[in-house]
Image (cartoon, rainbow, N blue to C red; front, side):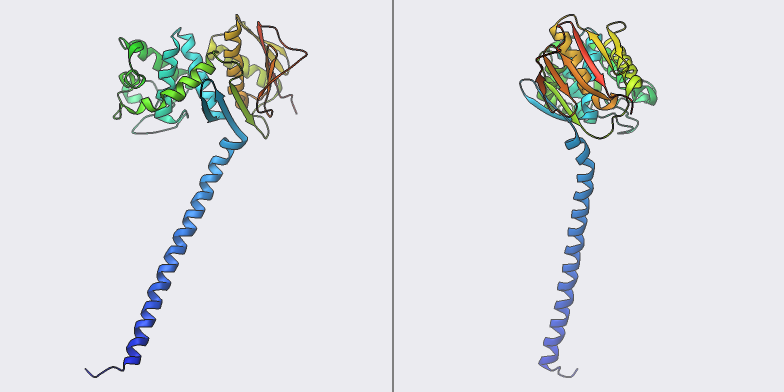
Length: 299
């Protein structure tokens, strides 16, 4: 093999180096574009629940949820009261749903798991359609919890594990604090503790919204006559005491997005769907024995 001029060798090395560098730069650019597009997609998914349809709960702590999570949490809490269980049961149930589904009513999961608690039809929890009903799922969870001997004295994660039999038995404990905050608010131990804000067109209006609210209160709280339609655009809920009043008021705010609630008033405090807080009202306040909700009027 003859000698190759040094200049030709240098030129060939330089060309190959440029090719390698150019290829590397292209790969970096492709990766960067992928990351940017991915972040934009995540941002689109998160923008609605975190900004325009967000809920904040403050009751000796703070929890932030989107409107769907908030509505599910409120229903879980209410079903616990229907079972006449202590607050601790609601904490356990909320921590379980936090871990299993993020408080979302999932259509699927591991194997045949479904719904808020990721209950499995093959394990006797019910049909997929039944389990996708948050009220049914919560009811079945509490029924199972009541069968656990000594659950009241267990750690949250231990009580949850007795029901769920998860492969990660310690996972529920990390949601105990958030569940305590939600329980205090949703069971009426705190005043004006649930605030939700949402924009855009309401899910329903007028008589349809008032009827749906009345039905929801009956299903979640077992109220058959306490909730009465005040007009085509609202309803009044009878409360036996202040704590009960705040239970219903916080439930109504939690379900405001999916039931077209525009305003909730209890005592001298009022929440509106775009106000972002509970505000004191000087005139027209309700009595201590009733909660008033106003829905959006028909367009």
